[in-house]
Each structure stands twice: as structure tokens, then as C-alpha cells.
Image (cartoon, rainbow, N blue to C red; front, side, top):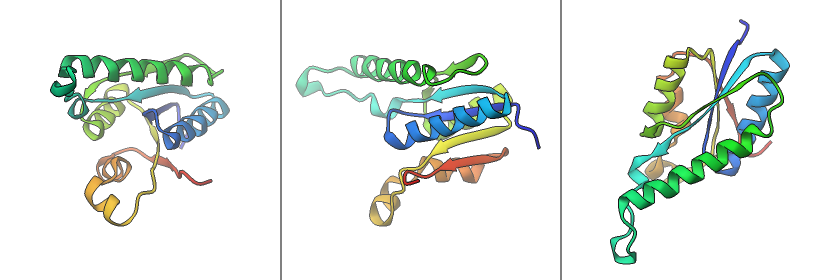
Length: 144
């Protein structure tokens, strides 16, 4: 199979940066179109009323972080046009929906490599995406 549209799911973590690096290099090598998706997790936009931070303000901070991350990653890419998506919602659902809407034929994401209780309680976005994806996925481990 030839991959023509590679969607790379990112956040501002180190594993995500490694995944972006690998995904962008692969897109360049295959002369494929690349896109980044950074889901602004609305569950994290709760704010802190005691500190005077309202949910709307917290959401603005998350959006700014997403924009800065996407711009930083875009500078790493020297291939064709790079698409950037920044949906607000739930990471797993929005990554899968973006892949479907954009008609990606490969999804690239990083993993935090959590184990034990941390994995049990936090769960893994990568694992949930793997379970529900209908296209091939390249998972980039945190340790390479």
C-alpha cells in the first residue's frame, strides 16, 4: 500500500514530538501529504475558580499551547503543504474523526509507555485509537 495522506496526532509532550518527527520524515520520504492534529481536550479546560481562572480562560491557554506546538512542528517539515487541525473535544474521538474526514490512509501517534496502575487509571489515548481505527497506525515508542 502507498500512503498518500499521513495524519500525525500530537500534543506538547516529548513522545508526541518524536512521533511528529518520525511521521513528518515518513511523509517527506514517501512524498505524501502530511497533516497534524492537536485535539484541545475540553475536559482539561476546567479552570481554577479559587485562583480566579475561569474555564473560558483555561481554554484560551490550551488553544495557545496547541497553536504554538503546531507552529513549532510545522517548522520541522520541509515537504509539501502541511495541514493543521485543532479540534476541541475528546482526543480519541476527534483524532479518529479527523482521520476519517481528511481521508487519511495512515495515522501516526506517540505513546507515553505508561504501565501498571498509571496505565490502568489514565488509560492510553494511543491504545484507544488503536482499538477503534479503521486505517493503519504507526505507533512511535517514547524510547527508541
